[in-house]
Image 1 (cartoon, rainbow, N blue to C red):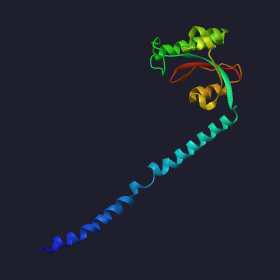
Image 2: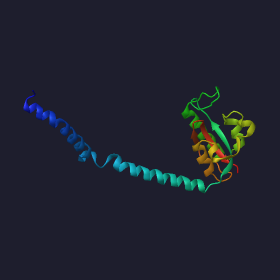
Image 3: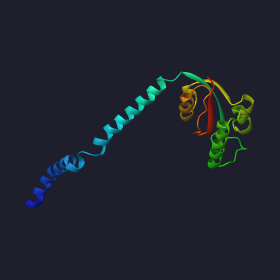
Length: 168
């Protein structure tokens, strides 16, 4: 037969477990801060960013025409085997090409001379008319923000560095 002290502990153990769990769940260190505070703030920031993006897209046309020069590097997606420059070398070259264009060089001539995109020189870098969803987001955001005949800054995507000229 168990001793009375052990018997009291045996009976009290489930009661202690219930008390311990409810104490942990409602203790002040578990309240406030953390997700209770940051989740609504983050949701509000995401909603505001979405609304800004929506208003920008609503103010732009559904489709545009553009040409581009693509300077690739050895880590570029879909790069030809002949491209072996580093990412920094590609960025520097793209900046140099942009300066030449801003200085009056022909965009079409710069396409022929510098673009790494297969077939770009034959097409003059022309991408035709396209909708927003066709291109990758950084490219689309830059291209759709341009006015007709305006040239973008250097735009980085997973394909490399683009210089975009809106045509329509």
